[in-house]
Image (cartoon, rainbow, N blue to C red; front, side, top):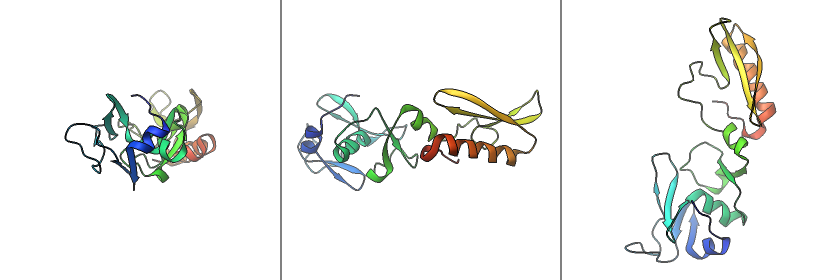
Length: 162
């Protein structure tokens, strides 16, 4: 994926309600006014421009903010929702704090797992690339409360409840 400049983005694209449309005729059968890109299997809207691949949310962010951050977070976790109000600049860690719960999570609660050796629920929360232990709990609800409180404190606006 390669970046384009603010001026290139403003010249080539029009933003409308979370989607990009071509202002120019970029190539082949694509016409000015056509919607840009398609949704990949991972949910990102991607397209080709000047023989390079681009993600639509990055171009939309650039067009509205005038700069391209290292990471852009989709606030609602939906990678296809590229409305500008759903996009925010983030660090790599912040972006990870807001990711969806892993499919192999067995507790149903972020940062809570079962410890067979203790026969209790364990709370571990990642912060700034370090994993920290916050206790063992017999009750899943209490473990969930602790995990959510710690994540809210450490992850702030990037904390995701579920």
